Image (cartoon, rainbow, N blue to C red; front, side, top):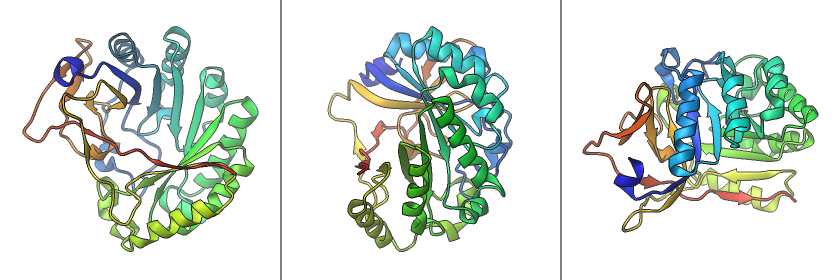
Amino acid sequence: MIGEVTGIRKIRMLYLQLLYRCNFTCLHCFHGKRLQYADAFTAEEAVRLLTLMRDEYGTEAVTLLGGEPFVHRELPQVVRHAKEELGQRVEICTNGYRIERRLTEIAPHLDLLRVSLEGVGSTNDGIRKRGSYQSALSSLSLARDLGVPTGATMTVTSHNIGEVLPLASILGQLGVRQLKLHHLRPVGNAADHPELLVTDTAAYGRLREELAQTRLPLEVIVDEDLSEHGAPEVCAPPGGPREIDRIEADPRGALTMSCKAVGKDSHAFWYEKAANRIVHRPSATDELTLSVPDVVYARA
């Protein structure tokens, strides 16, 4: 259905939000009230969608996220099937809080563990949860010891923009390979915490200069939105693209092709779980908007 409507023939990665439920209520979380929703994929539904995407769009990788994917009871089944039966590259995005037992169980089937952090020590804990900083570092250390490659994400806010380089240094010492920096959008919980927004957008330029001038212990990837003027909208070329990097499924089955739709309910395509099919539900505001390429600052 996606190919028939858009002309897209290949989608490299599926970002699969297994559930909304989370053991954190982070101040900046874009899900907001949805964290209380019961919507979730069962292992069977997740596997059916992964298989459909592989067969119809050549999808070769999956990123599992939530909510918090490690609180999903059937996470190991999804991970094992994606890796062993479908031959896909498997990444998990997590808060890294008390995941040691389950991480050890799925480690042989995992290609990347990506942990979210919002700064160093109390800065992170003030946004996320008390004790979450040390727990995240422990999970990264365990993953390293288990032979699982690691990465991290950080949403840049007014509270932590000065801690990007210190955090990168700490992560580098733990063997973390990559740090992704995301732009904070005022949706979900963040809408109730405007103090987190970076109002001096010139600070983004200073951050980029620091990254360019510093010998980095790991690769840092920066959202193009983290600039003084924001990111331009990049829409599909005439006739539509033939291949895109990712598509995201939320726990209800709503599909979106751009992270710029985060926190919105307008989706052109839906995965109907019971029927195991993707359907087109157009609205007046739907259009194919693709993300601008991120800026990468390589390690020294």
